[in-house]
Image 1 (cartoon, helix red, strand yellow):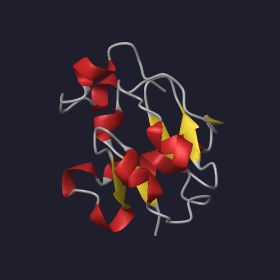
Image 2 (cartoon, helix red, strand yellow):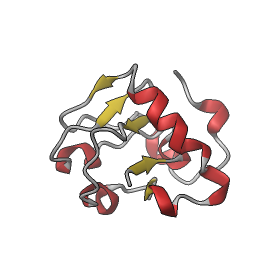
Image 3 (cartoon, helix red, strand yellow):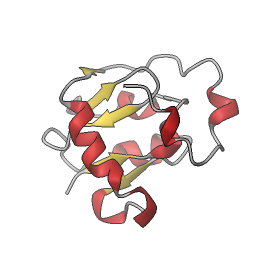
Image 4 (cartoon, helix red, strand yellow):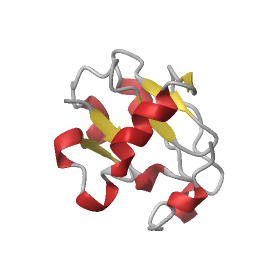
Length: 107
């Protein structure tokens, strides 16, 4: 099993999760983070650190967000690895509670 970043991360990109990851499985896109399922060791540390509750165990991803499992796998193969915390996007707090924002994901 792996962990999966879901829709809540889009246009926020808080990186508290990256700081606690022992294996550097997070990858950074323009406005979203993805977890590489081949690198994730299922340690659960990132889940509690996410301020927008965007990270789920693969088996617990809500039904309406199951497509993020494949999306994380795809994007993590092309985006650069992020190994330390960086600033969230400037308007992250404004986007934190917005739903239905998949169309805002930048590749």
